[in-house]
Image 1 (cartoon, rainbow, N blue to C red):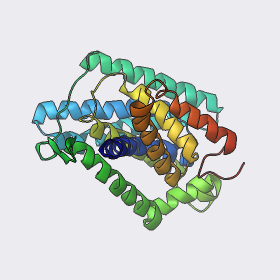
Image 2: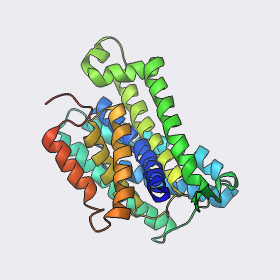
Image 3: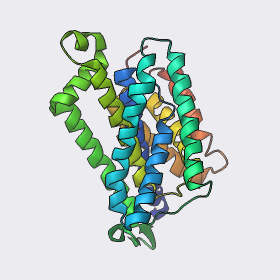
Length: 286
């Protein structure tokens, strides 16, 4: 029983990190129609910046506060000077650009911080373990399990009750109509891209004490994030949440019960979803 509950907590903690980055990915796609292959690299950059601030200040919270805004500022430059000239062109141009950015950022990280993996200790208040039946469980993972729904609730309230949230939802449903009624779409796109990058970097900063910080960490997360977005439905907020939970639990239970098939489980589940609900669990009917 305790092993079963531990697997649930492990799945939820990883699922909450997946939710943060998937939420940014699906928001960018829902509003801008851009599939950002560099999103995982922004997640990785958030982890590295958090690690760097920890080295400078000795405080994890400094990395969590200042790392994501730096990534968001970088994304503003990317959207303004690289992505914006491609709006209106074939979508393959955007895919090639974001793929090139992914390679550039990955190599840039290796150039600055080297190819080695780094360890970031959790803050003192979240370090250590708590008793969990006859064993123990890391406090930091409990923190991630609690933080994820709170962030999700905050995002839901932002999209539901704030003026900017309503503008984003309206633009996601009909961009042309939003432009006709006075929404400044170029500024909106820049803000959405920066917001998505901030979420990715926030997930990366939170992941730093959860896993090793290394140059390949963005590759795994972007593949799983795309799976989450497709499972939940492209552009769907609840879909990203449910999809991230499902994938996190699949990874956790798969590693324990059927380790030989664990890596294949997300792809098998994705295949089932595409065959039965091509637009995802929360997408419209095809």
